Image 1 (cartoon, rainbow, N blue to C red):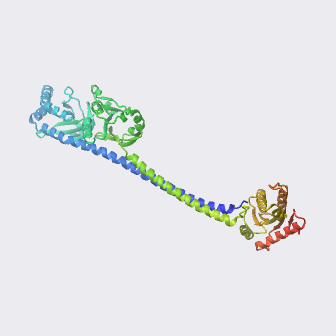
Image 2: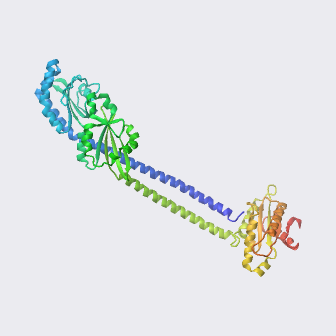
Length: 519
């Protein structure tokens, strides 16, 4: 066994415990760091989504009062109300005539609505039949209850209904008011707002952002008149969505940052799964090193079905700043871990050096006499003649004084080091090899009978005799062997018997091995 094996094992075990603790600490700390990063990132997403919602509601608030004003103007116009009442209770020519009269009266009002970005002014009878589309007067008589939930609810429940809805001609935010005149429920009147109108207000309120609108193709195909489908064009962002043509053409010239438009193919790929989810979401996309925040606000109809997205885009450094902040935290944590690990390793390395110095012979790097005596004492304590035995070999270099006297102590030291390496290479890993002092060495052979130890001694003697040392002078060794006996309680006892055998080997002419039991 080489020196320091036991000490290294002890130090290695302690170091392993520290490393395990450190790994657990690192895993927990980095997991917590990642968790906090994800939570703060999600909070940013949530804030963006709430921000878009509040922006839309703020924009709608601008138009809500105006639509209420238009409604009041209509229901307070006795001429219009009488014509509508008469039409509701008549059919044929009277209804046709009254339709034209109402159209003539309300055309100025409609033109005012158009200037204020409203899109439709629409009258319905109580049963859901269309009386008059001021925006498209040639189309009337169709029943809307099956396709326009807002119209159905306003008439059946006789309450104001407002919200987004796709229609037969256009989509938009609708304000549908029940019309009651002279105590009679005549039907409803609708004022609808183009999404382009919402975008107009958003652009005025938030000049650092761009806005887009897309609507599901299925929602359009299900309701829109065939001749009104030209109001829609396929979206380059998703094959399942349309652009509202009017809104798109109005909006595209106002887009301030064209980077996203130029990279729509990349966006299409990155956003597909999220768009298909049909819920509000926020995505951060990096293009040419610049982060863009894209907020998709899900627009639902009166049946709570997702039918469209309002999209808000802008350059946004918030996510990059958040990432950099946590990256710095991670680096600092890593530096703390490395510093701690270096401190622990340095401490154990220093202890190992001290242990090495206290237990190791400086010249040969073998165990010294002190350490060997400790290990021999442990072996004696474990000794049980019925289960195991151990032996000790003690040897020295023959006529070593002559080597020192003739060649010098430096050469003598080299002989000692070479001999140590030679013997170390020819003993078992379980054997304990030490320098006893001067040119004298000792071996502890666990689980070895005296006869086997003598065989080992002869093997070593022959190896040394045959070895060509670096200096020219030939070297031999003499060896004494002794096995532990039951009555021995001290290390000195077995060492003394092995030493007695060594003395006998020298008396026999040196370069020989003797066992204590053969004396």
